[in-house]
Length: 547
Image (cartoon, rainbow, N blue to C red; front, side, top):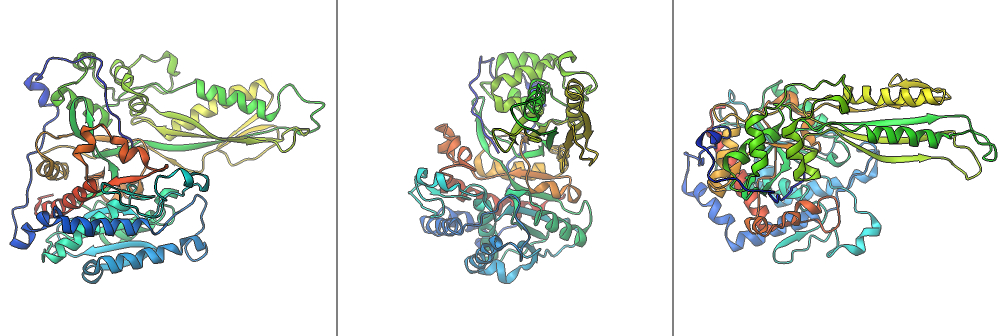
């Protein structure tokens, strides 16, 4: 979940030709038709100073409960570090009494929370809203550098500070606030509403999201959900415009584990290259053979570029010219080495904006872990590295495996080693490649205004923030719990719907996003309350929608 502020190289004439706007049609603002005095009173209530204080308490107290998960944790009931989630659920019960008395609640794999608000029309596909209860750890050595302690939930008059304030207890609490407000207003849903809250998203979702998704599928079947909204992308200033980019896809992901096994011995009689030296040679090859930047026609960032050309007053002139001439590709010739492929002029120009934008169109390579050797006088018998790849739209994890295997083969030939590539064989004098988990890029959610939930999401956003806000498809470079829900709906959005216009105008995008997973995580109270209002509107609009 990364944001970037653009500094255009040059500005084209404005406004653009009318036909450009046809490439990125915008939804009309959408407000619910079915209303009542109590329902009409929800938004003014959320805007009141009285409710602001209440909402601050809701989120602040949630942050105070350290629902931390770590990589490699066991399962609930065996790993005591999960015990804190009992306390968190008790807090939710006390804070949102109507939700916990009116909705049916299932605990999935002990701490996964599945809430169901039954609608009156069972033929309508349900709406599903998601968030996760857990947060990433706070390294002990960083605690003194926090402005406010990470689990104090401190409110300074503008921000709530602490781990989980923006990733993503704000979304979880915001959803529950919205449902509690709708219950108080005696809202009677026609369409069933499901809330799904996992408890180990930050460590892969192994123990929660998969179980929650299977529980939903067991009840409703595949392709049974009208729309899914999980944590994700937020508004940003882009090319002189306020652009909202709900994530409609995610890049793929795979870790390649490389192990070099060679004979040991005393360091006084070394071979020309130790296992660490051979590993270094292979790592150098892997990093040097980078992936080409290219835009698949399905890549949501192509839609972002089209929307920028159509609606943004500071869209770069060079990019606009290339956009008119170049079309995105429908496939990449992965059998041809990157250096021999024809460059994608549109992707290469768009990548100049920043490193972040480059990796919206490029498979990334990151050597994140490396270790080997035990003593300074003993030859290392093993050396290991873990190389993370985030796979571009249009490419596959199998392509990544094949490429690393090819590079390993060339190194093995130089050092008289054998290669065991993903065959589960461990042998001496060899290069061993494993990849315990691989995830291809997510299916791309449709963004047509004629069909699907994109129109409802866009219209709800326009009604709340104004018609000057541009809705554009977005791409997530990381993965969310939605990776377990692909079979349940084609309409999956990774979206943080609240934003603070003052922060955007001041260029303080990092005020929320730039602090996720690091020191001084915080969230603007304005952003949080806007999220509450959005969920109220979206639930009501989906309830009336013909999707």
